[in-house]
Image (cartoon, rainbow, N blue to C red):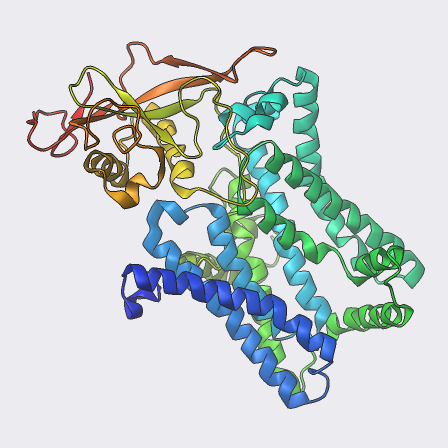
Length: 524
């Protein structure tokens, strides 16, 4: 359990257990959204201090339970829940549960911790790009992004054919939003008169607006499923009740007394940043939570700093830059603390409490797609069409998926990148080919069209094919004003680890040094 913390050690790994965990997460998250709305509308929490305490504890446990259930799914799902956003979802659940304990008594420190998550996420994305592919520094990354991203759609085609100056300006805008705007999050941290503070809070809205505009552009020109919605929710902490009250006022729904109470609460919240750490008998628990929040801020910064130094940065390296040459005992104190931070970060990885933040660091200028085909005689081949990925053939433009993230189609995108470097496909890809050959119903349901099923394109009686093969095809966007969306061509004379033939039972298999598994042969 300590190596792979998951609830499935207790409930088993049956389909019913998997569905039960997913259903429990949906129910809990729905209650976390709906129950506070009901309680606030009825003003229940303010009627009894004991009731408020009980509700706070229950809500905290609900957040942590949601995070643990998703962590459980990550550990048993392998590659299919291996995206950054999956780990980040566990992290934000754990953080929201933690800050919920001090949200009412000390709202400002709790808010700062959540805003730091948004700050670190956006800054990490900018840093990883700058220190990643050279295309970003050369301002050419967007020339290839739209056709090389995991799941392009029809809008990707039009974005790709924008002028070169537009792509260069898009890279510059990305760096401005992800590297510069995050610092505007802290514009209203200064203790200033209320009139000036209002101006500084508007500057924070600029960061929020910039983040959402970039997020919108990314998710319109490509398919990223729930990731865009998740990013939008994570950035909500950059707003406050002033903004939403102003919007309600425009609609004629705002209330002046609510606005007055919000202003008073914000002023009290700023003072709470200091009072949170005042030692009194009643604040020991809040002090412990405060220490946990500070520890989170320190440990969670390591992945971003490590990326900035190309993976060589540790907390101990930071100590060596401190200007305390004449005070070695001070450096020793910081060094001891930094080593503990490094240890904490390495030990928490299984729990996904602090994660690396950064997307699109690596760029490439080609798109290889796996094509899976079946045959009864080894001569005439019929294509299995993906549900959401690109398929070879006319009129292929890609689908628009607002919130759905198809895990199979998404993970298959990574395989040609590894194959180009000589990497062998993972075991589940061979299982996919085997099950397609056997026409396993649960696996065939993941494919858009089985040519050997009922109503398939293959001639003859429906039934399993004798051969299944996998090969890579190069895709490029068709020229502007063309009748096609994509052009495809074979990798002429180039063999890759994804050139695989699966031979069905009873047909006969040949095994040599190039065999990947029983019934699998590399295609020459």
